[in-house]
Image 1 (cartoon, rainbow, N blue to C red):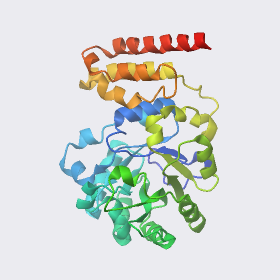
Image 2: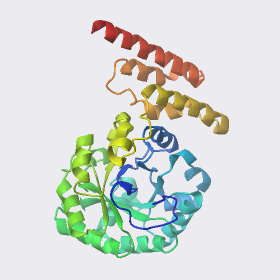
Image 3: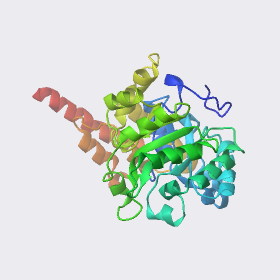
Image 4: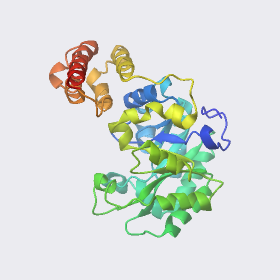
Length: 346
């Protein structure tokens, strides 16, 4: 199946676009982050940060929807609760080349509560169904929903089952399930990612009860063996913070989970140098400073000798006036020095 919007046929197995994905994360998964992640995995689906329908309609649409061609497959996540506005925003996303439009029904922050979208929409399944239908009626790309398993202290499986069943009536066949409740009051967004208990079994049960739907699970998954265990029970796995803080986890996903043994595995050095090339390109094209890009790759050497000093170089504000290739040379010096010291000690 192509992921350019040419077909909406239901994919299966290893060829599903939703087999592995990186979650939409506000302040993190911008186009520079997604370019970096694409250097690590060719097949994994990448999501934008959430963009509100109002911002797209009334703001700088071109800037908000801009992405690098290399990012494909890439999906646009929308926030909103007005069917007409979401339909217009979905059209804008499709026109700009996104291969999927995703509706956010999982974010618990006060900002989205005031805007009547995000996780609070789980309490209004008929409205979500109408929002989905409005988008499905005007675009050819898949319209998907990312949601929680419940809100506040509502922990009954029946709640999320009925939500999925109702929303599916609007034409959504792909559900990305963050396997925690969202507490709309009393917890910060950060606490909402950590305190409500994970209940993966509810996502697994959704797949059993809705075998015709694509169900992907999200939340607290940090290892490849966990990914494999979930893929035996659902159609896909979405990784969030671990992909950002420990991106090298993704380096063998193409071979491990997509059977793509023909693509050579990347090396950290090659990925870092490719990012330096990208920093130079971004500055030449848009005047983007290298440190706005480098912040997304600070986890590249997570757990390795010299990683701390390497990160310090790439995040040193005193080096901002230097061109990125000179900063790269300084960072590399620490990698080489610490590597040699570790080898000597061994």
